[in-house]
Image (tube, rainbow, N blue to C red):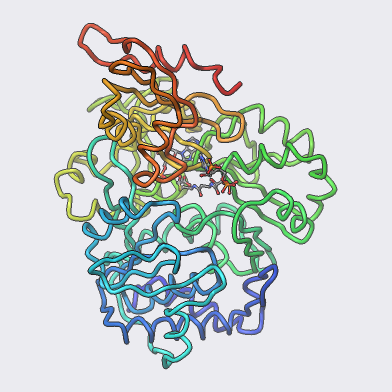
Length: 494
Ligand code: MLC
Ligand code: AMP
C-alpha cells in the first residue's frame, strides 16, 4: 500500500475536482482539479531537475498557490520538503544548504545567491524559472510509493546550544496528525479557512493546510497577515488559525466586531502563549472562545482545548487522541498540580534530528517519550497548562528566537565585552527581544548592534532594544541570571 500522505490528499482532490480549493484575493481562484494538475506538473518538473525519492528540496519562497503546488509536488515524487523562513539572510541560508545537502533550492529571484546547489526561482507573482519548468513539464503520474516511516519533510528548529537541527517528519506523522485534528476540530466539507499564516512553519503548513486537504472545504489564501484583509474576508470564512499576535492585532481594530465574525464557527490559537486577557477580551468582543492548542515542529500538535466542552483561557487543553502527554522531572513522572517538563509520545512525534543521532537520543526517554523543553502542569482531568520553558528560548510573534545565536554574534563585536539576550513582555509580539550588553569601553547603542547583525541574522531575531550595563548579574556558579534581567526590564515595551 502506498503510504505517501499525498496519495491520501489526492484521492480527495480528485473527487472534488470542481470545488474551489483556494480563493486568491487579487489572483485567480484554484479548483481542486487545478491543484491536482499543478501538483502533477510540479512533480514532473522536479523529476526533470533530477530530484529523486529521498532527495531534499529546500524552498525559501513567498506564499503563492504555485508554492503550494511545489510543496505537494515534492511529496508526490517522494522527495523531502525543507521549507525555510523568507526572513533568513544569505549567511543563515548557507548553513541550511550545507546541512540539508539538497538536490534543489527553489527561492525568490531577489534572494538568489551564488551557491553550489542547483537553484530555481519562484516569485511572489507565481512566476520564475520553476514556474516555467512546471508549465513545460508533463504531468507526472502516479504518486511515488512511500512507507509510513519515510521522511516527508525536514523542519529546522534552532538549538539552545549549537546549530539549528532538522526535525525529520514522516508521512505517518503528517497523516496521523491531519486525521486527529480534522476529527478534534470537527472539520466540515463546507468549511472556509481564513489562511493568513506563513507556509514555512508547521502551523501554517501542516496544521492549517492539511485540515483542508483531508477534511475538505476551501481556504482564503492571504499572502500574509494583514488585519484589514482579515477583517474583509472574515464574513465569508468559518475557521481561522493564528498566533496570539493575530488576535491582539484584530482586537486593536475598531472594525473588528462580533458582526464581522457572524459566519465563523472556530478561532484557533497556538505557537505561543495566548494571554488570558486576550482570551477574555476576544470573547467579550465577539462571543467566541478562542480554542488554544499546543504543539511544536518536532511533534506537530500535542494537546487541544475541546471543540465541544469547556475551553479554558490560559490552558492548552487535553492530549489529543492517540497522543500521550505526561509531566516529568527527570525520571520521575509527576502527579496532578506539579510543575515539570512536558513529555509526549505518539504517531505525531518525529523520527529524529537529521544527521544528529546523539541529539535525537538526548531528547527521547527510554520508553519513547519526547522531551519538549516546555514546562507544564496537569490537572486531575488531564488538562495541561504551560508554565514556562526549560529551554532558553524567546517566542516573538510566533517565531522562535534562540538567545544563544544572537549573543554569539553580539559577543563578536569588538566593542562588546559580553551580552545576554532576553525576551520581555511586548504588546504586539508577546515577547520582544532585548540585548543587554556590557561594553568594553564606550557605550554600545542599538544602531551599532543593528549594523553588526544586519546581514547575518533574520530581522525578527534582531534585538528591538539594546541596553547597556556595567556587568551582568550572576549566581554563585557564575551563570547569568536571566530571570533577574527579565524582571528588571519587564516594562521596557510597556
Ligand atoms: C516581523 N517582524 C517581527 C516579527 N515578524 N519581529 C519580531 N517578531 C516577529 N514575529 C519585524 C519585521 O522584521 C519588521 O522589522 C517589523 O517587525 C514589521 O514587519 P512586518 O513584515 O510588517 O510584520 P508582519 O508581517 O506584521 O509580521 C508579524 C506577524 C508575523 C506576527 C504577522 O511574524 C507572523 O505571521 N507570524 C507567525 C509566525 C508563525 O507562523 N509561527 C508558527 C511557528 S510553528 P523592521 O524593523 O524591519 O520594521 C510553531 C509550532 C506550533 O510554533 O505550535 O504552531
Ligand atoms: P517551534 O519550535 O517553532 O515549533 O515552536 C514550538 C514551541 O512553541 C513549543 O515548544 C512551545 O514552547 C511553543 N508553543 C506552541 N504552542 C503553544 C501554546 N499554545 N502556548 C504556549 N507555547 C506554545
